[in-house]
Image (cartoon, rainbow, N blue to C red; front, side, top):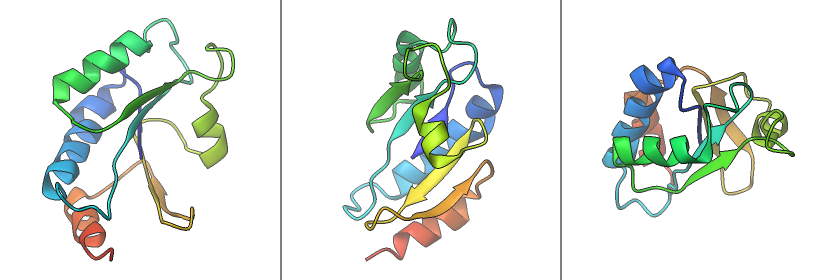
Length: 120
């Protein structure tokens, strides 16, 4: 799961390009599922559902995208609270038993691809 905000410069300079590399490298691998969630915790006026859709189109990612702007659409993302993420961009790897096996701001996409290829 990739957590981002549309206005996040690090999401555009590092996170989304890394996500795209991983998605392309693991295309066709039915053991790995990617999804991207706009986890809004600030700038609710700018990090809208519409901007999330624009971001998905900009990167031509054919994976599910979601928008989590908190309980009332104006508070902190529920995913951020549930998974205790530290902001954006943020990567989470969750295994088939719902265990978080990776959760961090920084990711090495080559190492991540190598790791994800070992999943049986």
